Length: 171
Image (cartoon, rainbow, N blue to C red; front, side):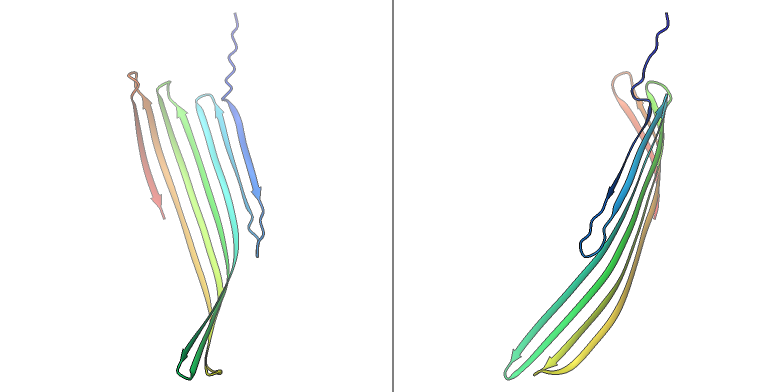
C-alpha cells in the first residue's frame, strides 16, 4: 500500500501592498511579506517603505495695547519636511523534532527626516516696523537600528514549555 500525505502548510505564500495619498504633498507607502515552508524549515520576512512629505504653515499674530501704544508681533514658520522610513525583517525556524524548534531573526529600521523651515517675525510699534527677523532652519534626523535574535522553543511532555531568546540590538 502506498500512502501519500499532503501537508497543507508547505509551500510559498506572500502578499504586497501599495498605498498612495496626497494632501498638500505626496504620501506613498508600500510593502511585501512572504513565508516559505518546506518540511521542517520555515523562512519568512517582510519589508515596508513609507514616504511622507509634510507641509506645515504656522502663523501667529499678537497685539499688545498699553496706554496709547500698540505693539504687534507677527511670526511665521513655513516648514517643508520629508520622512523616508524602511523596515525589514527576515527570519528562519527549523523544527529539530516534534518538541523543539530553533530560530533566528534579523530586523532593521532606517528613518531619515529632513526639513527646511523659513521662519520670520515682524514687530511694529504704533504701525512703524521696529524689528524684522528671517531665519532659514535646516533639520536632519537619521534614526536606524538593527536587531538580531536567536531562539529555542521546547515543549515538554507534561505540557510545559521552555523558551530561550538571545537578542542583540545596535542603534
